[in-house]
Length: 173
Image (cartoon, rainbow, N blue to C red; front, side, top):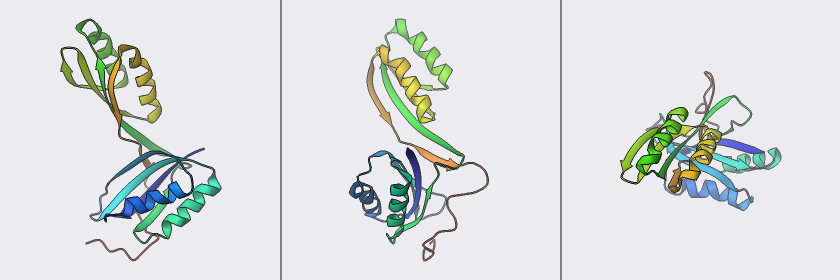
């Protein structure tokens, strides 16, 4: 089963490496990893998608909490959440095929961000499944280059992942 974990970390050198090493030592394959700033200065948010059984994931969460720079860890997989991924794809697009590609992009809510004589770059954000379906449909045109950011997730509703921190010693600057 896939688990989406959200961890709040101090924005310090080496924290990401130490955190991810726990997953490596436990033999988890990290399917997606994103890290970025949060609304609080000095705090980063790491979102991981891993494949593992519940017991093992709970054990990794406990191990993450032993790292001093990890403030809070949540498995948001079971909670109602919104998950998004970003895709940039460069597709072979001679003039005869452009209108068809533009229609597909429009159907998926994608944006054309660059056009050159024989290629088109398309940007799409959405659920990982939506991006997979889009890639499957444009693959026959000829994908020249593709990059995805990895998943970010937030729980739905008023509750937040960001507070209160389990490791309470953190004080925002």
